[in-house]
Image (tube, rainbow, N blue to C red; front, side):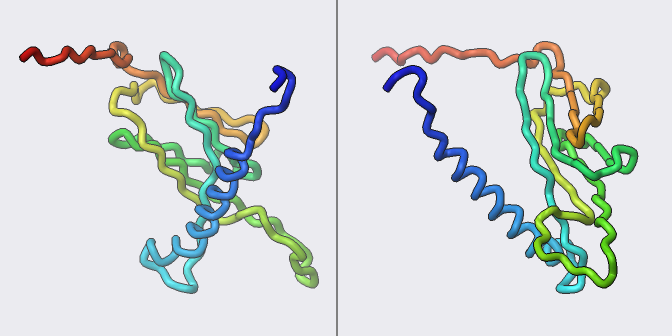
Length: 153
C-alpha cells in the first residue's frame, strides 16, 4: 500500500449509522421517558465533539438555527447540560414537506466530564452555528502513570 492511498474509512460509516439510529430512537421514545405520551413534544439531541487537551476540555456542538441567547449551558456536579430549542421554519400553510430531516423543537444534551474541571473557567461562544464551550482542567489534574511491580515469591 502506497502512502498516497486513501485510508479505509468504513468505521466512520458505521459511526454515522449508529448516531442516526440513536437520534431516531431518542426522538421516538423521549416523550415517554419524560412522563409524556403520544401527544408530547419529541426532543432531539445535537451532535457534539469533546476534545481533551492537556489543559482543557473543548466541546463543539452543532446548533445551526438556534439563537445563542436562548441556549442554556449548565455545569452541575461534573455534568455539562446544553438545553434550548430550534424554532421550526414557517412554511406556507398550503404547502407540506416533501422531505423533513432537520430536527426542530426542544433539545437537551448531557455530557459527563471528569470531576477535576474548573467550573469558574467555563466559556461559551457561537459562530456559524457551532457552539464552542471550553472548560479548563484544575491544576494538578493531569494523569499520572503508576508502574506495577511484580510480586516476589
